[in-house]
Picture (cartoon, rainbow, N blue to C red):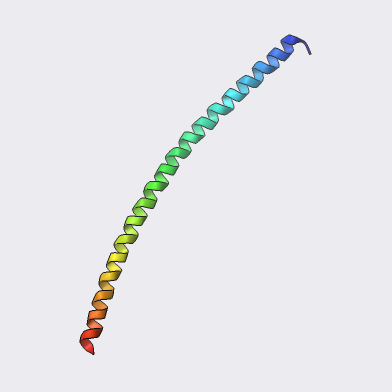
Length: 71
């Protein structure tokens, strides 16, 4: 293999590596957006769960008061 052939092979490898890194960067940016959306959804789920817990506690107090009033 001549030096020119080696240089051409190296250039080809560098171009291929550059393309791979570029695609990896684009995929990483997409994943960042998806992760941010998942974090936002998890936060919203947490808020919804806390609201449901408050509702359950209110209902539990009402039931306890009703049971206490009947006895």
